[in-house]
Amino acid sequence: MKTIDIAELSQQTGLPASTLRYYEEQSLISAIGRRGLRRLFDTCVFQRLALVALGKSAGFSLSEIAAFLLSNHTSSIDRGALRAKADEIDRQIHVLQQVRDGLLHVAKCPEPSHLECPKFQKMMRIAAKKQARAVKH
Amino acid sequence: MKTIDIAELSQQTGLPASTLRYYEEQSLISAIGRRGLRRLFDTCVFQRLALVALGKSAGFSLSEIAAFLLSNHTSSIDRGALRAKADEIDRQIHVLQQVRDGLLHVAKCPEPSHLECPKFQKMMRIAAKKQARAVKH
DNA sequence: TTGCCACTTCAAGTCAACTTGAGGTCAAGT
DNA sequence: ACTTGACCTCAAGTTGACTTGAAGTGGCAA
Image (cartoon, rainbow over all chains, first blue to last red):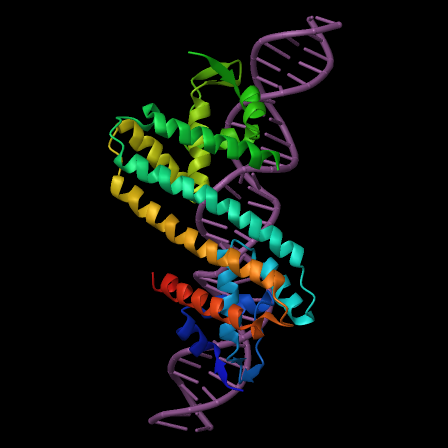
């Protein structure tokens, strides 16, 4: 079992030591000991941190990620919740695709003001609908 | 020019009045007058708000959105910035697609712990790479 | 053995995007 | 004329994810 201290871990991940300490406090990672005051981590912490990064990019909050990591330990994970999150992400993907196309359109649209461009107006109506739904929920 | 007061606007958009006042303070929208104390808006405020909603779903900050709205007025918008944002969103879409697939996989993967599942490990390696890039930037 | 310096803790600060609360005001109904 | 209720302002509070600062500590080089 290889170990790594917080300074090296910080250096290799690019995460500030303060962030690593914060993550430990939030139970996202855990030190397996100390060398003097200095935290020592098992090298599997890299995997944990990768998982944290993944979760963050999926829009999970740190406490959601912590819950997932914990459930992974107790091996009773909530598959329904995962599917729900996957669906949510899927919807988010569609929104982002429209937003991206909208931005690209605006970037090359010759209309003097976007508010006068029919395509843009259409996009906005779609966005408005999405907003209405989001508000309901 | 039709007008609408803040109560109706709040009711019709689902946004709390406090949020509308906040948006006004941030120059995202502007009242065209008052009826008594009560703010009055031109009905084109709906369009502004749709644009704000769109920008938010694209991950723009409110001040970025304000800048865009302003530039739209001065009719000199930064097309390069829009394309850059579109690219950023595109990358985000790819990340989310992987995350979604990862979640769905985990949801039906029979491995006792995800960390032992080869597919999951592969996904994590990809996420780790993305993180490394993000950190660099 | 004595410094040094990077670590440590713990509390407090920061930022965005709002929300909440206290105290004030105005138009409209009775 | 008076009350009511929804708005008003301005300051302060909230949440999540950290960062910063002050004061302390321990391993290692000289």
